[in-house]
Length: 406
Image (tube, rainbow, N blue to C red; front, side, top):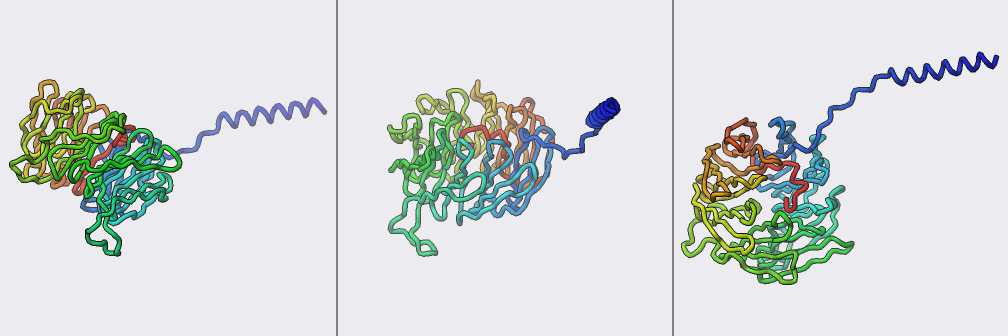
């Protein structure tokens, strides 16, 4: 009897093992890696497209994002979520794997961009109305801090009767969980430090008249604000912050001729290659070459029109330039070894933005007025493909998740 039971147990064990081996896995949903994805703003319709830059195609369209007339994007550190900063004060968290809005809040009346902290836990938004910076938990979009900008004494009141505050511009992330931004109306630069449980704000006054935009160098050291109210720029060395703000490029601006400026250049579009920065001139058909060790101009390059974005390929061998209205149908390429123009492209009317693939083999361009995105090979400048889009503007690839200030 014992032998029979033993044989039966062995038979059942073998049968169970066989069933485990022969069982087929259930079909799973198709996986979508995030490393070669991106988001394109469709400004006229309040939509974004999710795109793939390996296959150069559009994957999905998401609507309901409000006013995207001056929208920008940052990514979570795992590249899954895109945070969209709308002009209407909307902060929208998009799940680019599920192609849907994960969370949306209206945090102000008028906002102008944002940033994500070094650890990826905080998202900050710079606001025109009311002036200041609001900081949110990146997971829940719950308000963490409300940093009110300087009140403008003697100015008209807001509609709700409150005192008007300075508009905030040029918000960037910096190392050590800091946010740096400029105050347009009160001529200040502030550094908000969120490295401890209780955040602190360090303020620099009288930095120059009306800072209108800013950038941070790729290594996170230099914060540079452009000045709308006077020539020159304001530089803050974050490695030596106690030395304060100093003025550089004293001749940078509209100069004595006061030429018409169709669009102020985007400082985040500066190209930094080696020891040089390639800077769009204000109101002039020139790209200026700046030595970043001395912060002095060393050369200038004549170009097609008034530059808006001056952007370097990831390998820094070439710099690509687009232009403001009415010459915004053209893109030019500068060789950084010879400091000379090598190519002129005519993508179409309204070239607003360019974005390089992470290793620089391709560049995507938004051609707003012709409702398309064009994709070029950066080596031979050949047009590879066109992707339809409704008034496209900003193009943002997920590799930005791992870059300072982007």
